[in-house]
Amino acid sequence: MTDKSFRLEVLTPQGPVLSAETTAVTAPGGLGYLGILRNHAPMVSTLGPGRIVYRDPAGGMHQLINEAGGLLEVRDNEVTILADRVGSSDPGRRD
Amino acid sequence: METLRVLRQRIRSVRSTQKITRAMQMVAGAKLRRAQEELMRSRPYTERMTGIADRFFRARPEESHPLIAGTPEGDGQPAGLVLISSDTGLCGTYNERVALAALGFLRENPSARIVMIGRKGQRILARNGFKPVRTIGDWGGRVDFDRIQELAGWLETQFLSGEVGAWWVATTRFVNALKFQPVVERFLPLGGRPAAKAEGAGFPPLPEKLITEPDPQGVLEELLRRLTRGRFQQFVLEAFTSEHSARMLAMRGATDNASEMIETLTLVMNKARQAAITKELIEVVSGAQALQ
Image (cartoon, rainbow over all chains, first blue to last red; front, side, top):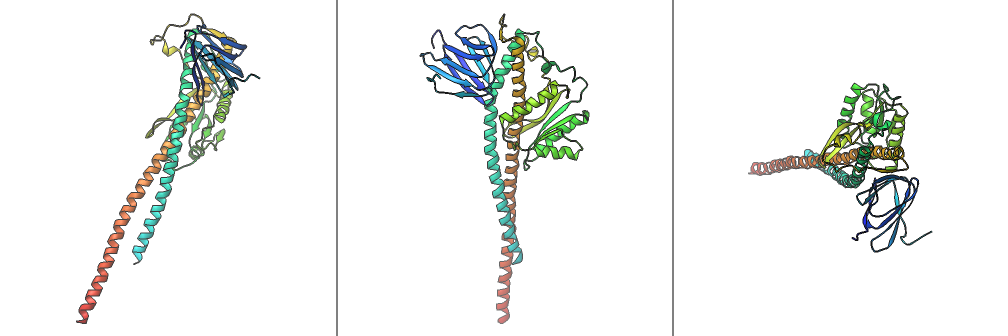
């Protein structure tokens, strides 16, 4: 764990999807994409469909697809995403 | 001998019944395990959501919503009851017990609108003169998340439009694989702000400000939509898990009873056979004696 990292958890009603250390998260917020780094202020936001991209402490980029609505909370260096359905996609791919 | 043959036949038939009940017990056991897993897997989501709701309401105590406090149109409207029972039988007293809880509620609220999940419960309610406004009879104890969401959404719409003053759910709480408890719980409105009871319960101090996007009302809508669906899903999951547990127990009981019956019948058969042998011996011996 580096001093820039924080926790990212993604859960759906069917079960937990992801629990990882990350240094940066981008998520499709209700008003547009949100970028979240360590020590972000407490926040609750709605999510729309779109890409959830996060960077692992080693610098690798990973991506999940939020297929429907969702909710995101930031608190104490922990980002929780509650989504209806999440699909995964090839981490390195950009299209 | 006639009785001997009849006894053998009975033992054979009990034995094949036992094979069937044992197979059903194992099927129910497998389904129980799967349902239990689903119940466990959904729990973290529900817990996180409750946590977020809790913090949101403490940071924004001024926000309210009809889903929490009830609708003005729904005031004085009849209540609604969702009864979750099973589609298939052979599960002991599972359906009777939850239907009994539901009937208790209906006696106090005779004008309640009834939504049925499961054919068995519907039959029991029909016997008591209650007709459901909506019946779902093809879930068969399988959890389909999309259909649960659809039904939860429908219940929410009925509530928000004031058709129904409050929704209650008669379901069965899953305690463990041997124990389950029928309950009638209020589903909507969600009731007093979920945070109110947590006040001063040793929770960490509130963040002085909470950013909400797009705005507090928007977040609240999304949060409540999720809370209601999550809660309803929990009701269904608990009931279905209990159903499989009840069926497994009933079938285990039947298998044990069959074993006992085979044992008794075998004893009776052995006695009959011995009696037949003894009788034949006496005939032979007395025949030989008569010749002397």
